[in-house]
Length: 91
Image (cartoon, rainbow, N blue to C red; front, side, top):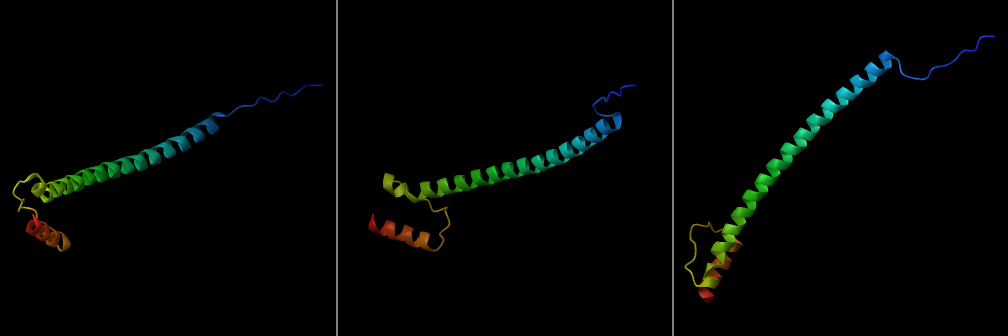
């Protein structure tokens, strides 16, 4: 009686299919990562600009505390304009 030995492993075709699937998934995931990274950079830049504008606005609004003349280059908007006029009248 001849014994049949079974060899466990992958065939060349199975390995090529697995590598192709892995390459496709890697390509898709790298594109998604690039889009997320680009969006995060744009958001960070917009946040930096927003914070810079708010800091400049607060500096101009608080100049009267240091005894400096007020900034007139910051545009008045609604309640903030009323607040600025009330503070100027009080001090």
